[in-house]
Every structure is written in structure tokens, then in C-alpha cells.
Image (cartoon, rainbow, N blue to C red; front, side, top):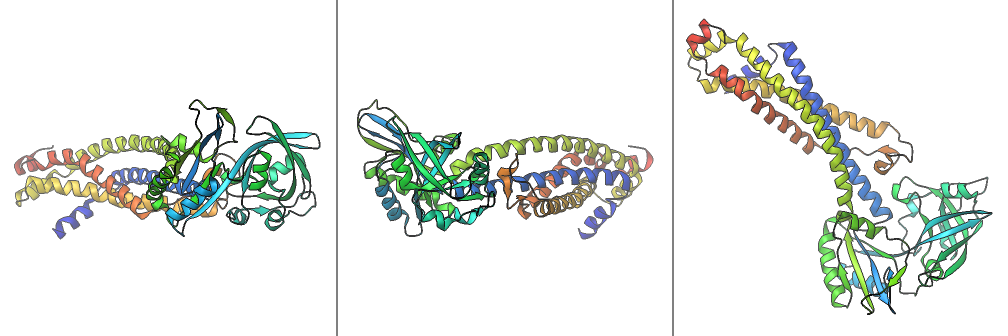
Amino acid sequence: MGKFMALAFKNVFRNGKRSFTLGINYAIVTFILTALLAFSRGAVTTVSTSLVRASAGHITISGQYAKDGRVFNGMLRAKEIEATAKQVLGPGATVLPRYLVQSAVYFKGLSKRLSFTGIESSTDTGFRSQMSFVANAGVDAGDWDGWAADPSGVILPASTAAYFGLVNGDEIVVSTRTRFGAFNTGILKVRGLYTTDNFFMKELVLVHLPFLRGLDLASDDAATTMYIYLPSQSSAIAGREALSKTLASAGFEVSRPKNGSEAVSAVSAASVKYEADKEGRDRVMLKLSTIDEVLGLVNSIIGAINAVGGLVAAVMLFVIAVSIFINLRMSVNERLREIGTMRALGYTSGRVTGLFVLESVALSLMFAAAGALAGAAACLAVGAGVPIAPGGNLAIVVSNGHLSLEPRLADMAAIIGAIAVFAAAFSYFPARRGGRISPVEALGSTF
């Protein structure tokens, strides 16, 4: 068997030009598929990490509550929900309530509507390491500690500050329509201007949670969303189930998102508002979403990108299939004397067929492996060496200023294996015709 395989590998390049042309096609297809999967893996990892660090938890609680004939976005009994989550999910879980409000901002004749995020500065500190504070107009940039010490402080993106001409220490007027329909105003003092590589934080305007509650005339037990972070993302589904049962037994109405779009809407809940309550009973309705459900929409988009690349690969594989048939047909014609000799020496039809199939598979393995290695090397080089400017269409899959690409050995092995199976399948029929030639016919005529 060893000599048979050695003979097959020796014959791979008997016709170097045809073999090399076909092999290059294998390498190109493998290169494309390796790069596509590396992009997909990197995109999902980057988006997941960025979301979790900015605007979603492993489990995100959002919802509505009905009170006094009105239904509001957000939740009441937030402290009870927080305590229940910590009790059910254990000491390793971190629970962070937030309050979101959209408000108009006024400064020196300019106005703009911004989304404000209210957090507890003593516990919700994940943003701190992702912000680079920058100076503006020669005034110092401010810092996290200065903001945390000022109950009416605000941290702004540098781009927003540039629009208004704001510098650290300026005061801005905010005005919002509260949950009850009336307008309320407040004054915030700029305590920091920042930039970030996290796509989902680029427009974040950070204030203290009690300030936003007061601006919206909300009670001390109100929140818009609650983010729960677990020691492992893999435990999110089981954690959600356990927490849902406990909250339901405590009188909350609990549900889960119906689809990815609803999950995305849940983790990016807008300002609280109200509408008439058709049921006429006070209640708190919670929606618990996991990060996997939020990423479902992202995976659909990535899947569409992969489908386009897969279509290109499929077209190339069709060309390869035709090339395999022609290449083997010509090879059989050129090797009739060899076939006749092998058959005369006792080689069965199956062994001759197997020899040609093995030659085709060997060629595909060599060039597919080369294409996969080249694809992985290109991905690593681009990911590490090509800087990507912030903003733009690629910003969502950029990490630390570089495109996130993750070539994996398992993916490469799967692609190479699939190419080898493809080569074996499409080389079998022309190889079988060659194997069926009798010794007399092979030595005395042309196939």
C-alpha cells in the first residue's frame, strides 16, 4: 500500500503545467474560504466583546411597567430585581442597573438631541478602561474621578464636544419630556471628553443614574435596563431560565425576545415614555435577553457575507470540476501503456481507478494546504499590520485599531478536507473509465 501511495504522489506532477494550473485553483478557493471564516470568527468575537463591554450584558433585563392607567418603558422595583438576580445567579454575577433618556442639549445657541446613559459610578466602572480622555482648545481633558465626584457631571464624546465647542468645565442645559408628558430641565457640567475604539460606545454620553431619574421625575426604584455579567457566557441561558422562574414567582411578568431584532431592541431601549394601559392593572413586565440572542442578528448578517463568498467559491469549484474531468481524461489517454502494463501485472480495475483518484486527492491536498496557510498568514498580517481608521463601515469589526481576523486550524482542516472530498468525488468517474480498460485495449489502442 505504501508503494501504491508513493506512486500516486510521484505521478501528481507528471504533467506539471496542467497539475499546477489545477492546483492553483484549489489554492485560491481555499484561500478565499479561509479568509472568509477568519473574518466571520473575528467579527462575531469583536462585536460580542464590544457589546458586552458597552451596551449589553450576558443577560439583559428590560421591559415595561403599568401604573395608574399608563404603561411606561423601563422597570420598577429595580432594587428588588437586582437583589433577586444576585441571589439566584450567585456571588460571581455582577448586576448593573442603568437609566436611559433622550434629551435636547443647549449651549451658546446650538442644540442637539442626545441619548444619555445614567450609571452608578461606584460599581459600573467597565467604561473607564475603554475611554481615552482628550483635551480641547488647550483645556485639560478631565477624568473619570472628577466626573464620579460631581453628581451633575457629564462625560461626552470628543466629537460631540467639538460640535458644540465644549471644553472641560462648561455647563450645558438639558431639556427632556418626562414620563408624564411635561418638560423638565437640568444643568450638567462637563467633566471629561473622550475617544474610544469600542464602536458601541462612540456616542455614549455618561451621567449619574440619580440625575437622570430626577430629570425624568422617576422614582428611586426605577431603571430602564439592567445588565447582568456572569463568570462565563456559556451559562447565560441556564441563568436566564433560573432567574425567570424566580422573578415570575415574585409577581413579575417575564418573557424572552421572539427573535434577534427584538433582542437588539431590548438591549438598546430608548427613553421612557407612556401610553394608555388597556388592561387597567398595575404590573411590571420584564424581557430577559441573552447575548447569544442579540448576536443572532449579527450572525445573520455575517452569514449573508459568507454566502456571497461561498457563491464565488462554488463557481470556482464548478470550474475546477470541469478541469478535473478534462485533466483526468487527457491523463488517461496519455497513460494507456501504463494502464495496460498495470492491468497485465494483475492490477484490478478498482486499483487503477483508485490510483488516479488518489493522484487527484494528493494534488488537492498539497495546494489546498498551501492556500489555507497563505490565507491564514495573510489574515494575521492584515490583522496585525494594517491600521484601520476609526469610524467608517468597518468600525464595528475593528479592535484596537486593527481589523479583527481569527484564522483557526480547525476551520482550515475542515476546508482542506472538504476540498479533498470534492476532488475525489469529481475525479472518480473519469478515473473509473480508465480503470475499466482491458490490458489488450490499453496496449493496442487509444482511449
